[in-house]
Image: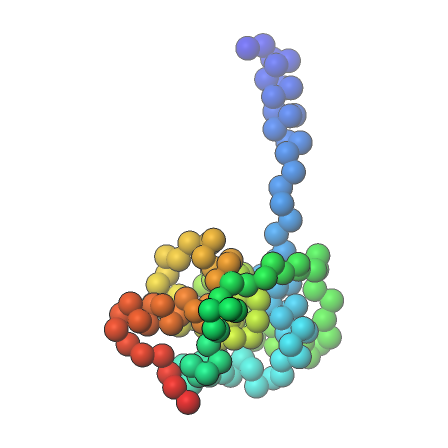
Amino acid sequence: MGLTDQIKRERAGKKFRRPFVPSLFTIVAGIVQRYGLDQNFPRKLDNLAGLPTTSLFPTKESLFKPPRAHALFALVTEREYRIAEAILQRIRNPYLQFARSPDEILACNPLFTLNPSLDAERLLNHHFMYLLTQELQRRGTQPPTA
């Protein structure tokens, strides 16, 4: 292989497009904006009491998450910025990038604690509350009730 072939191969390799992956802040800020979360929401993440009750757990019909298009970047107010930053400070696990609703944000830490090795496809396609109930049932414990 000559030098010109090597240069051509390197240049061809650089032309591959990588899929756009929004930043974690953009994902969380989008949820904060979409659902109008207030300053009290990050406090719910400090304990498991903020976990929704079983009446809010998804049914089999809502088991799968619809695909969600994220914005290219977050354009938020100062209040929304502070809420998003507070959420990011309280949740430091890789499951957060797959969250699409406040319920899933609340389930992030407990789900990661129960099973830190869930694959990306399950996190992308299944609601976190469903995955959390599966993990609790697998361990023989019951989810919190109202």
